[in-house]
Amino acid sequence: MEHHPQDTKKVTPSLRIRQDKGFRSPPVPNLSLPASGFITILRQLENDVAGYICHNAMREQVRSFVLDALLRLAYRPDVAGIVINSHSNGTVIALDVLRSLPPFAAKKVCAFVTAGSPLRKYATLFTWGEHIATVPMVETWKNFW
Image 1: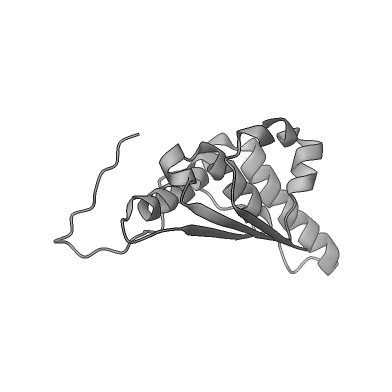
Image 2: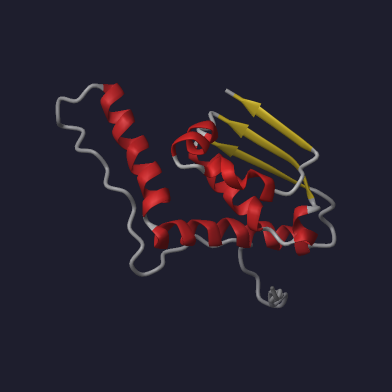
């Protein structure tokens, strides 16, 4: 993997919001329907999970964005360590990206913080547990539920 340094003469934000052609957000449920709050939450969760698991193009765009952010941090000489802080389905994305970090970047990850993580369900339902050995060792992993 080759690093392409940014032009330091041109001031730009470190990350940009991607608005790639063809990227679609999951549909928002029609809130005018008489569905309970619980049903609405389940539908939103279903959209998030299905969007990440079933739509490869969407998953790769999300993974690429997070990987790009972590690599930008890892390449910086003034960054001694990286703490990845994630919530809900973001914990799944973070672990997925952590598996693909090059060794020099993975060594900079000193802590992984997860909250409200569905990782256990992914490991059970989608057999993601088979690949847990490919995750680089992280010094500290704190999980809040």
